Image 1 (cartoon, rainbow, N blue to C red):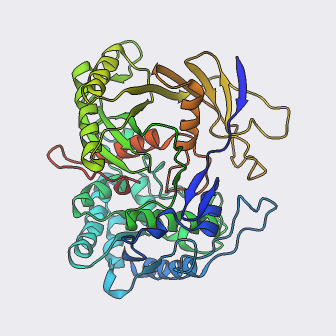
Image 2 (cartoon, rainbow, N blue to C red):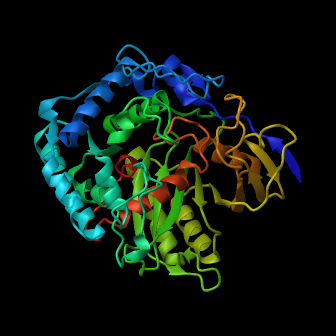
Image 3 (cartoon, rainbow, N blue to C red):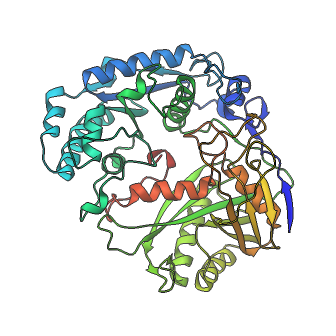
Length: 480
């Protein structure tokens, strides 16, 4: 066994490199700043009740102006937001106004509170927002549509009873009481799936998250919320990337594929596979696979040889269509172990495309823990090599740049296991660490999972609501 701390991967911006997305954007400019086809004016469509629209207008104005960082000795963690402006940082501005805004009547929204069934409340509210989103998408030149959700409405959509907790609108939450229904009804997922064919990404926000200095327990400070809000809108509305991983010239051109599984809304279909393909710039393509089987021993889903071959062939065809060439190397990330039939199917597809190097990597939570003699837990990037094909990697942990551990709970590491590898295990772990920083929905750079698997999970949440005869959007911006 051997322990090593990997260097924090660097990110590339317009005028240099930095390890931190916030500091990089603020001082070096977004990566695509010099792209002459980049949009420097992002037109925001807005949907919500009158009070919510007013709150969003004030929040957008504050974001454009700038927000001071939280008073803290950890200044790198709680960095101030310098403003969404054309003069530095994002080098862009938001455009919004009455002609790009659709107001939902408060009385119509309140009617949903009186609907007895939560499933029916979800459907009614989705229809209310969909009608206004469709109008903006079809009749106004918007780049992204922001939907403002009243707090009481959201609580009624996520809880069966009249009284509810205080959840945030996020990709991780809102799957409440699903087990009580024969068919999953999730407001966020259903709305994103239903509007997908309109071709305009959505951003959902709660009214309470738009108030400055709310003091709500667990809510991020204003500057951090502004960073995440503006970065997500920039990516969704501009269809370009604010940062990318530094490309190492000596490494072959690599394509990363993340494979995940998800259950159908009725929880009856075993699961369906999907893939997210990333090139070295972080661009991605979403694909939907076919229904798969469950292993009789551990109940984990898996693909047969034909399914693995077809899924990867489709992914590589999309890669070829986008970049007009094949990668020199292919890396597959999967959250479960690779079965022999999957390896045969993937290998067959790789060889048929003339790709010379491949790495099949399983990434899952580890039961092994390391303990530090210091005040904080092990440093992010701590790597424990157990063999040539198995290692333990801390993607969450103490961060030297922040001078603290920025988490609330004891971090658990990931188990990295290589089933087929042409690269060293350390190189594979360095890649995993780097890909945890490629989530443009969060500017704190210590993500837990690489974007390959994080995206696969997020896509699965929405994909289960997309009808089988409907072609899903291929951009990650429609799922985040």
